[in-house]
Amino acid sequence: MTNEALFRRALDCLPGGVSSPVRAFRSVGGTPYFVARGEGAYVVDVEGRRYLDYVQSYGASILGHADPAVLDAIAVAAAGGTSFGAPTLGEVLLAEEVRRRVPAVELLRFTSSGTEATMSAIRVARGFTGRSRVVKFAGCYHGHADLLLAGGGSGLSTLGLPDSAGVPTEAVAETVVAPYNAVPDLDERVACVIVEPVAANMGVVPPEPGFLGALRTACDETGALLVFDEVITGFRLGPGGAAERFGVRPDLLCFGKVLGGGLPIGAFGGRRDVMEVLAPIGPVYQAGTLSGNPLATAAGLAALRQLDRGAYDRLEDGAAELAAGLALAAEDAGVALQVPRVGPLLGVFFAAQPVTDYEGAKASAATGRYPVLFHALLREGVAFAPGAYEALFPSLAHGDAERAATLVAAGKALRAVAASG
Image (tube, rainbow, N blue to C red):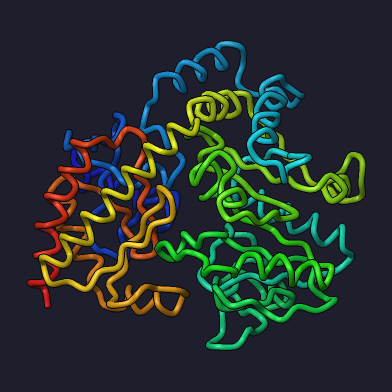
C-alpha cells in the first residue's frame, strides 16, 4: 500500500480525503503520508517510512506516541466498558487532578473536544453576565463554532465577518475581533474576552509583557469575564498552564489535547459562581453523551500523573536547545528565521524581526518559504505540521539523539530554502 493509493481511496469517501483540513497538505502541496503507527517521538507511515514527529497530534501527545502507562490505563478502562451515559469515578479523579493543578478552576465540566469547551464557556459567560458581545483576537483559533469563525479587520477592532461559508453574518454579529497583543476598548455590552494566552494557532506568538494582565484589568473594570483558551497551553507550559506561568487568573479556562492523554476530550471550568449557572443547577444548558468518557479520563489521568516539575524542566530544556539550534542553522544558511519559544512550545517564522500579531504571521506565510522547509525536512525524515500557522510540539520522548538528528536535517532544509530564492 502506498500513500498515493490510499489518498486516492480517501478522496472517494472523505471530503478532500481527510477528516480535518490541514491534513490534506493543501498549503504545502503534495500527498499526505498516512500514519500506520506511532512510537514515542516517531510515526511510521503505511509505506514503512519513519518520521521524527513534531506534530504529536497537534500537542495532545506530550509524552510521545503510545506511552506504555497511558496504553495500560486505556486497556484497563476499556475492559470495564467504553461508555455509559452515567457518572464514573474516572471523571471525578481527573477533575480533582485539574483543580489541584489549576487553582482558578473551582468547578469543571468535561466535553468531547476543545471546540465544545470554548463554545460552552462562551454560553456560560453570556448566561452569567446577561450580555451578548464576545471579543476575540485576530489569529487566535478557538474551534469551529459559528460565532468564533470570525476574522479581524485591519488595524482597529471591528465587528467580525464570517471566515467560513455556511456561517451567516448574524452568527458573528456580536463577535468583535481585535489585534493580538493590543488591549481592546471594552464596554457594558461585552460578556467575555476569549484569548489564547500564547497564540499558538498562527505559529507561536507570545503575549507582550503586561498584555494578559491588562486584559484582566479591562475585564474587571467593565464586568466582562476573561476566558483563557488553554486547549494548547494547558498542562504543556507547566502544571498550571499559562495561567500559572503568567500569573493571571482568568474567570474561565478551556482545556483539551494534553488533558486526554491522546484521546478525544475537552473541558471548561473556572469560578464557582460562574460555573453554577450550568444545568442542572442553573439555567444554562450544556450536555454531551460522551462527555467524561471513561477511556479518555483514564488516559488523561495517566498522562498528568507523569507530568511533574521535573518533566516540565526536561521539556523546556529540550525545547530551548532545539530553538537555539534552529536559529543557528538558519543563520548559517543565510535565512531570516524567527524561532519563538514559550516553555516547551515552539514556532518558526520567516521574518527578520519577532512576530507579535496575526499580520506578522501572515507576512511570514506569504514568503512561500514554509512549504520548501516542510518538504525538505520530510525528505530528511522529520515531520513538521503541514501548515505555516502551526506550532512545533516536542514531547518527552524527544531526547538528545532526536534533537541532534532534527538539527542536522534542519541545516540541510534551510540551505534548500536559501537556494529556492
